[in-house]
Image: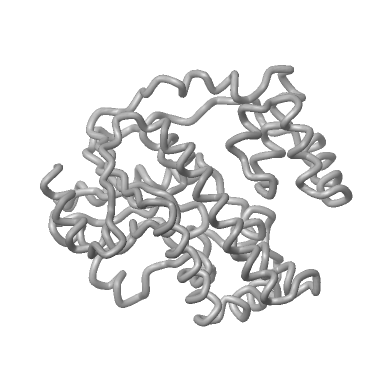
Length: 308
């Protein structure tokens, strides 16, 4: 990080209530929110990513929403560049910085620095993507299990971008990516970073996931995805693979009924949340707050203020 500014990170797995709690907390501590979400960066991907409404954003400024086109593959490096610029801008206006989101790689990269792996190899990536097209991403994930089981454990089998990168690093260096990333095993958090985490019991988390998926469908997720697919240039690989979007894309292609797609979204969301919980263990300085099923966002925000 290039600027010595204070940043409060509010993290937790998808659907745990970070957004509502973050807004309540921002109002209490006079902060602006920096979104740390790899899919909320995309314009017109609103319903499936759970972006705050325009009315909410007019009340509490949010940064790093709608900064990329769905035809782009957004990167962690680009995120850090924009996040640091936003942090300097916010601090320069005398406001506190509240980073809210669950994309663990972005949190890690912003608070500790990016992992400097080998440069991308266009020919190798093209070959791996061609194999994924022919055999499916699960086949590449199975290969990753053999060469880098540690990376495979934390990467979902449908997360083609990260699977390809892990295989690319192994093929270019002969060393598993997880071994090269041992520099991240010990926290190297920049000064001024505070981590607050929200967690719920699994039953409550799953109930919230099911309710969230139902709301997304009722809000028009299918039409949103259909509109994105009609755009030119077409959606890039990364946004197409987002949970909620990949399943509806399969439905619109005739591969799944809507009911099947909805059930697949629920399953994949739960798997994604599990992966986030595994990643969150890396942030060992996090102060975790257990949130009850009936506890309001305002109550949680008040508890966080008492922790700061």
